[in-house]
Length: 185
Image (cartoon, helix red, strand yellow):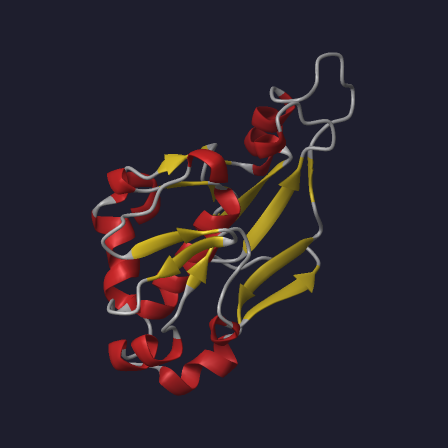
């Protein structure tokens, strides 16, 4: 997975970083600089990951942006996503993320493993991309099965907790029908 291999660090907002050539840190996240093309800024995250550090929900939004960038015309991407603000689940409405109930996932869907008795707030849960074949990628935990994600979160609970982490029965995905009008294929 490109983000996993990019060198991006896992950290909280307090210790987060984005390449200052492309982004400005503001109270609610990282704002794209006005003289920067959104496509260049998203590509930079994957090419210069060592200049970035963020938590799992930001990683999921960035993965969605990258998926769209790789699927539509670059000129349309830059038009749609100028003024981008990224942090947690902040994203442009044109990214068109929808959340559905249930557990019938397709590769690329994002799921959430909740950790009810977390010790540190950054481990209250793990957003993860379903990769197919029963595997998930969570920025912070890595690649594993649902059971492995849950087991990893269970090691990050309050001491003495008996409440296991679990996967929510919902998933988020891009609204492909909306985005297909910009397809580069």
